[in-house]
Image 1: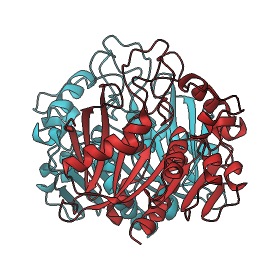
Image 2: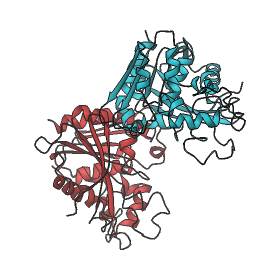
Image 3: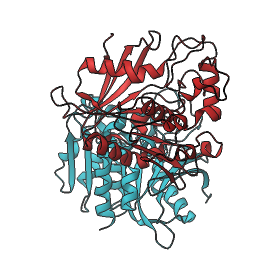
Image 4: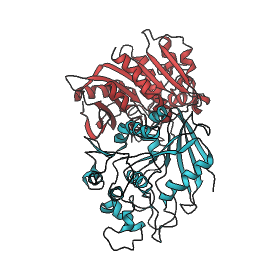
Length: 287
Length: 287
């Protein structure tokens, strides 16, 4: 496995935010970048819990680190945060740069099966397997036996679906404004239609449902630890892109969906509630 | 006087961040934008204290609002924050876009006297007089009898020099990584040489010294309430652009300069200490 290589580092909160890169097998060999916030107290002999933050459409590994307002609280709680990118960069797939909802900046945290995309667009494998393996190998002081996941919008979809597809792997999941029922909403339908080679004739196809949090939650047999915040003035909520009610409709215990009065889809919303999400994860990571 | 016009608004923290624009007389009639964070409790019958945040080179009215990490603490303390732009936009002065240290994004919070710049480059008047007047007229619930000022880098220079030039106008000033002795350091020398028509033969000219915080502090006769943070790994500190020691050398009480180990010049540094700066200003604004 390729080793991670340091790109830059900034002192922040009670630690450092370090940007790394490595050639990713999941992304067809393309170099991918990510940021790691590591509290100074972390070491290989005293590793700290890990939170992954998955960003939304058009964003990259810097967006959550710069605008998310998460780092001071994470430093206080002694939790590391890993910020992956949102897609491969420079795959050279035709049309990749033409639509902000598909291709670059829009990996949707799935493994593509359609011929056109499947060589590079495997953000699911990157986030769930390859990146954790590379980080374990680097021995930075991250304890992946205490691992949680959060994200925003497309990244909220990523966080919830990855949590639900891997029972026991994560202590908790949370999301800001997630696309919570993507097999039935426009962003998801567009992404799944393009990325996934659906052979089943059901509607939606089962190949789509394996990445749909509202569907996955129905058969999630573990105790759930899920927190979701959505702003009532979120334009994408109004346009039917998010559908957080479909999560609630499952009626599963341990799933809290909070509608936050007057908030929109922006990082101003995220930064307002980020400390509460960090505290939620800290409770489960340090239980 | 022209009225301010709302451009956009985002719910954040315990209030709203609203972007406004208005045609500025100080900027030769050009439209200028600024953001106002207003806690929800603020009203014309119950106005709240005001903090101005002046951003640095290449930044604009959004940078501090998005990356500064100030809004949650300001909301908790019930303090408004006003984020002006860093220069006129589109003045059309020759060379204005050629150098990131001069012209657009680099107004240096002064009133230009050189022929080439003096029509538009009067950020000092905008910040000290015109913007407060426009905000008072708009009756948003800001109490300018309780007013403090902070900033970063070029904006740290702006905050300190504006505080020191106007005894009694502000309750407190703070700065992150300020250009604290600009009449003797490269950014300042470049800006003052271009913007100011210096007729005196002293070195530095008196026209420059009126914008130099380390000089102004020497004759500041009021009780000072100044907090300055600078990172020890700040490249611009190492390059001699900041010179915070020149502030300390004045030996004035009430001026605290803290060197923060390992931090650099970025917003990661600002966001780490922003809550402490808000608390510092809150103490003086609500005394």
